Length: 198
Image (cartoon, rainbow, N blue to C red; front, side):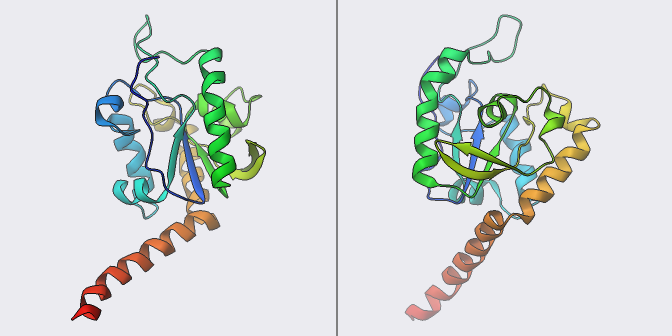
């Protein structure tokens, strides 16, 4: 694994996103999902009412592994091995115990496997709402495919339809709705704050 450690903003949130591991560009950028896959993913969440900036300020962004795993010999990023995943797992479990999220969004197969280790294919979980346990904490989980440009899963059927279904379920979830309500409240407060001071 190649440093630096990449983490999201330390926000208290009822929604937790779990990515796989940072890519080569996330370390220098100092934030997760800072490149092409992030652009795609944040477009998905913008459809649900949160811009990238709002998402980063309101959703706790974690990952299975926090450092870049390096390049694979066959091309692309190397998938972290079981030992690397195990060494990082205590961070994820501790974050779940501290946050006690109502909703977790695992993005990509490696993240999904941390909640549903028996999953063999994405079609088994993407587009469904399931109960999951992480760090001894129970929560709802709505899985998403990885938004990588190298993957065609979310751009072809049945992945395309299952992605739409998963995003709709996230948008309907009470934890997501509370994020949107908080955003509106904060926007109203900032609008009226200057008027109140004069």
